[in-house]
Length: 93
Image 1 (spheres, rainbow, N blue to C red):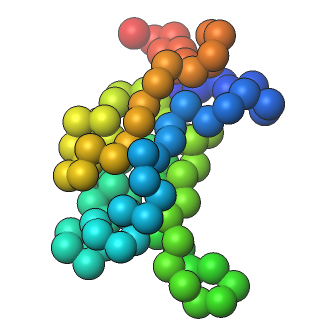
Image 2: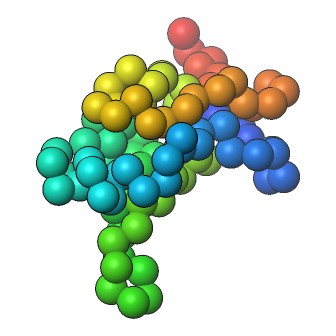
C-alpha cells in the first residue's frame, strides 16, 4: 500500500545492536513485541529447520514509520534511512 521500493542489492536499513536480545530477552519477557507493534509485519519470530526460534527481519515490508526505533523495549533495533529514493510513495496523499 505504501509503494515502497528498495533496490535488491542495498544493505538492510534495519539492524540489531545485539542479535541475541529478541529471542533471549524480549521473547520470554514480552513475547517479542516487535512482531505486534510493527504495522507492516517486518519482524517475525519463526522456527528454523532445527525447531529453534529465530528473529527474522523482513526489511522489504518496512513502511518507514520508525515505530520499531521508538517502541523496542531494549532499544536494540537500529533504523537508518534507506539508500536513494527507496522510501514510501503515497500517491494519493
